[in-house]
Length: 144
Length: 144
DNA sequence: CATGAGATGATAACGATTTTCATTAGCAAC
DNA sequence: GTTGCTAATGAAAATCGTTATCATCTCATG
Ligand SMILES: [Mn+2]
Ligand SMILES: [Mn+2]
Ligand SMILES: [Zn+2]
Ligand SMILES: [Zn+2]
Image 1 (spheres, rainbow over the protein chains, first blue to last red):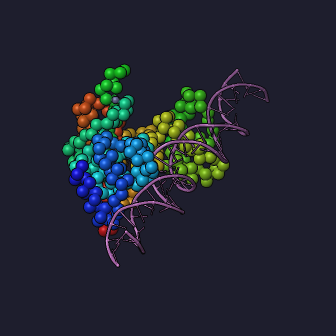
Image 2: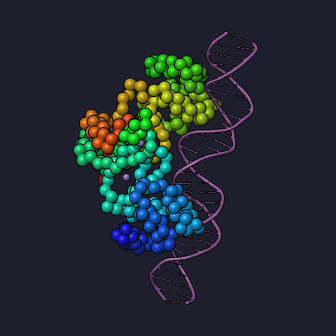
Image 3: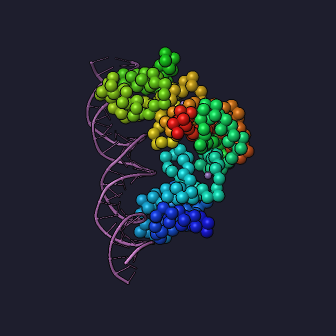
């Protein structure tokens, strides 16, 4: 978290952006959360510490964190953008339970490699991808 | 297209739904299009034939086609739901050019199999998945 | 045809996100 | 410190795709 703050500080000065107490509060709150978090969820948490904060500020800053390489947007397909830590959290895909919504982060080196191959086959140079695996987790299956 | 209409007819009577000229027009127009189409795009086309049609009707019927197994929703991640033919168009993934938006439909049996394995590793029973490969197509790369 | 439930079209409502705009406040230079 | 420039903020309005509402219409069946 020290490192992230440092990176953010450098990003701010390099881009002529300003350090504000709102930014610091939102960043700290974001970094403390390990789960994927939406702007509104983060807003609700942040509001407890500073009730005067506006939700537009939370939206704005989450976007900023992404540009600074500290956050990454995750689209779980429910129409709400979530964010996860990006610094020292390398790429991974998501396994999501249709029953309870639980998500597991997964990576499979072979899948990653094969994706590149498929893209090449069609003359594409792969830049990134989104893979979401949907299913039912063990607990949810037991309930039936 | 004959087959699809038949399937749809059966679906309607089996569910006590009615056959209307709007439904027929929207279905025919959808079936004629080979590309992924959004509700609004389809609405614009359909409107030319029947300017009195309402866009809610297009939204409603695309949903209905999906339930009847004739359409499938595709989420390319830009906040607009698109639909593609589902009947005799088995599952596939999408390769999308970041430059020009061109999409290619792809399937890789090994990737499909490995996805199941990954899910199992975490106790999940895979039901479906969404894989979008983003990159730059040959033409777009040449332009630089 | 009469009747009843489904379908339609116009419009309002929705929810997540973005924009606008007046006001506030970093911060670098004096 | 004070000034001045400009970024940042908060509140509210606007956006945009989609869904809900509701009065009216019309399909299907007897
Ligand atoms: Mn994750
Ligand atoms: Mn497709
Ligand atoms: Zn579950
Ligand atoms: Zn291209």
